[in-house]
Figure (cartoon, rainbow, N blue to C red):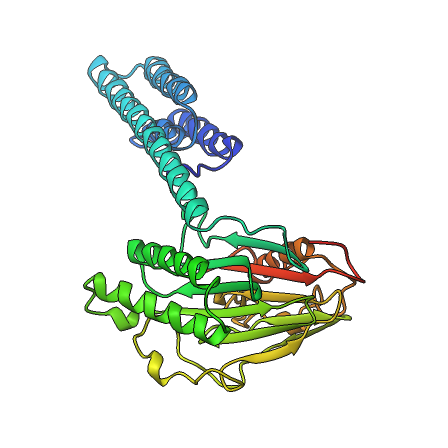
Length: 369
């Protein structure tokens, strides 16, 4: 059982009370030499792991009382009765110790989760709800409730070149992944204001992440890369420019249709130190797609596209009835719909972190996101 995630109280009582009752019945009706002592002793342990300290103490006291009364009723020798009482009492004390230990671990975990959440908010703050002609919304769901920070990243920023966005996934592990997220977001914030083109912005991010990998002295630096999609919506929002560096393609949702925007020229992820082999600036590196009024652009990480149902089938936003054929939505509606639909698809058995970034071109159609 994971500390800090105890089951409901009624589940603990559902397991504890029958152990006491069956233990008493076995002591009364089971043939000798079998006794119900093991179940009486097990009841405090169950209570210690699943109930409060006070409830555990009550169960331990009741188990000790039953042990003494049953031995007295059955006229067992004092020496045997004393041993029975001592066994149940000792296990009750151990159960109280287990309860205190689990409560302490739960508090420590809560503090760790709070720190992780603060780090997540500092490194990956929520994007603005409005940016230029766009309504914006984002969502992040960790694969495990205890892990509130991971390698997925996103950011939205208004720049002299229009609204620029990034969504990505750091493939490294642990602290190194968090450091890479911080570097990627920091480099994006700075370079998005200065890089004249989206392809140049991608190149500068690649340099920053490659330099960070080398500075970290990681012998496996080329395995700690970052996949990303960079997007730019200039001016009034009539179009969106996209650069995809090895990341799942975004989706354009408009008039009840969902279209995946695959890159016309596949490119390598960021941070591998191989930027020289990427396509040069221009049409081969940047795709341009019209963005009609009311259209939604959905950017996701592979926690969405690699989510599987019970048969092992991958989730496909294009085939989702929640998205395909749906009525007008704003960015918030889309983020909530995708997260809920993935949870339904997996049966709440999500295996990977999931980030979702949605923007809608404001104008005719749905209101601002």
